[in-house]
Length: 334
Image 1 (cartoon, rainbow, N blue to C red):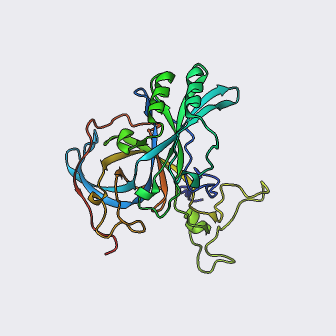
Image 2 (image 1 turned 45 degrees about the vertical axis):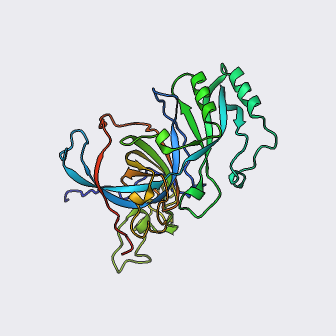
Image 3 (image 1 turned 90 degrees about the vertical axis):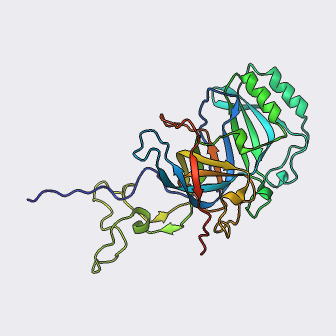
């Protein structure tokens, strides 16, 4: 008998089941701990598109250290967010439970498009209850709303996000959240250039696809019986079921994905610095504040992208922000 041949398995089983995401907005299930603070641990923006930049490589240990290299870059449109409410959490045997919350006095005019506001709420009373129950409270989070009118997305309804406040003592976190209530927060108040962030988003949907496109299996020979773009065999007689590891047709794309340690290459307030000549494809020009992230991000243009402090930051981080020598403004439509 000849030597048995083997090959790597086709397709990744890392994300199963590959079902559609419940919402088009990613959900953050974990917030890391930070030493400095108190500080907000997240932000959000809208994906505009991609370009490329020339920058001086500053990654420790890189073979190209000190040389000018090209990096693919994703541009996010990040208008300031409005801090609409503070939510305090206490802990019991079932986990975190809402202790109380305090809302801003005059929410933005578009806020009621997203959710029904409380009919009767007293801001001072809610803050007083939090201050009196600081011994029971273990965590503070703020409710933030985007301002789509300041971005390039064709919508008025704001996106709401709960962002954790961490760092320092619980009392310091309360005073910090209290100082933000009713105000707007910019991306520069949360992140800085050169920092690493985690990105949470829902990938681009591709509908119901067969196993060739979905799993990358081989197309069978032309004279194959019954099917060409299918699986040659779906499994043995025993066990008497189709195993989950067998490539099958189904939903492809529109899955929530978290990408770790995306580096912030640049933060700016004038979107014309990075917008192509004719604007980004399917988005248009970026009007105001933007953020440039290294590499690609999940999802199509206009999709909401959530940013978070890194859950597992790299051990070697460059001390200074990257030195960018050129940003491509060539139009992808020409």
